[in-house]
Length: 263
Image (cartoon, rainbow, N blue to C red):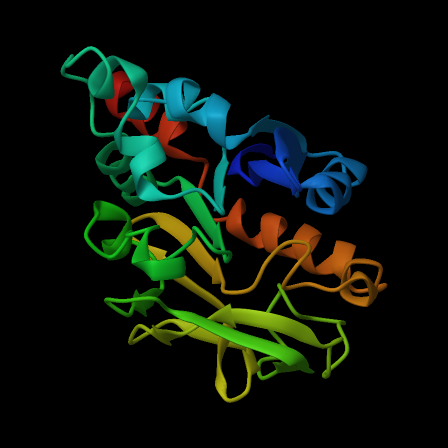
């Protein structure tokens, strides 16, 4: 089975309650990765989960550190969280560019999956801002420059356009409706597996020796309503995605070992 690193999918909400003359503040913490983690772990994959506030300082900084994993999943985590660790932002210390390291690791044979959300791809008010990073060059899609959200509160049904691909094989042609997604363009040579409203939803491709995939909606609420998350195809879709992403090569660590061992 594969070793997967998931970064993102957490948030803190701070609310001010005003009751006449008086007011008070409350805060809550939530994570949105539960169904995705369950789908992968039930298939035997080893998943390390770094919520946003943990990823800020503990996401791998080098290709060597990334070699501990077969697949990196970025979901609802903006580029700034990975670029600006506390050491850099608070202490003014030079640190590695983790997005550059991740892109290089993918080209060397690692695998990358980006899942949509308000802080994925470009995101709300373009604050995810991946278009200006090295990650943009390895994804199988091209991003818009601004806010790329397509809100569909009325619901739109994804449709499988490539039923023979290992990721979508055996899944129904029409999926449960979703409530939003990101607008992207598939790169030349990429495979569009699923579309929604005539736009790419699930796209696979290659970057150097690595395999890459973009899924432009959420992995849970709010863009995925409950009937999608509990759909019988939810687990198989993510399990088949991980299997395809991780079956490309022996991986960058093995490649480097062979290079060092070669006469």
